Image (cartoon, rainbow, N blue to C red; front, side, top):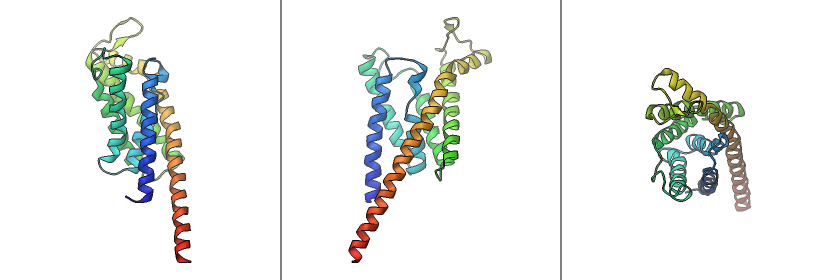
Length: 202
């Protein structure tokens, strides 16, 4: 492993720990801000910067570890080891990894903005479809189950929008932080290598 790859790996491990901690601390209060999470940014970063299975491993491992802690410690096992329909979340995160591969071959502000929007929309469409399909979704205006028709699906999407809006904003913010620090780290390593090469040449 090169020095650059080693530093990037350590950086990602630290970010994974921070993401898991944020998810765990937000788990107790289910509000629209609960979706203000770095997991989307991590998935985009994995798709843009990692290759092969590693691009999926970082976000999925973080999601899995934090889910286990949340369900066994925060919720004290009331919902089992995994919550109902958890796989829709994992499918959505894996989709965001693919979006990162597709939209972020090079990093620019416009591309990051587009990737954050597309990621949020994909997450919203997939996860809320899963909620509606499961039959466990609740119409918050009537406190009754969502109807199993197009009206119920649209209601499900409407109820989920405040959460996804914040997911988009957090993905954009944390992507800027994550990719920005990675760029700074990369430039630092290049500068150190140039200094070392110069000293060796002397």
